[in-house]
Image (tube, rainbow, N blue to C red):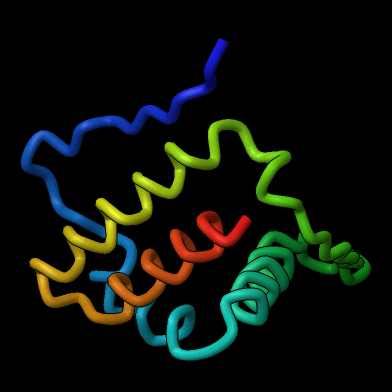
Length: 108
């Protein structure tokens, strides 16, 4: 059985993500790993109960071989379609991001 990827339709709704000015400000200007860690830490700080000890965060960064992903060829196609969509909308950071992820998948 081949794994496939499915995404819900927006039905003409707003497109978020790279088009969100707040997200664009902190997440896509530099290293994505740094941005994800910063956001996770901020969420932990925000969720801490008043008067309680600080939360502890541990991260374990792992490299996952492309061949271990389910249906990497299909995932590459999806990233390329996302890049095309972003290019049409002139969202350059998104187009670059999706293209680079597709290239990673292609290089295996």
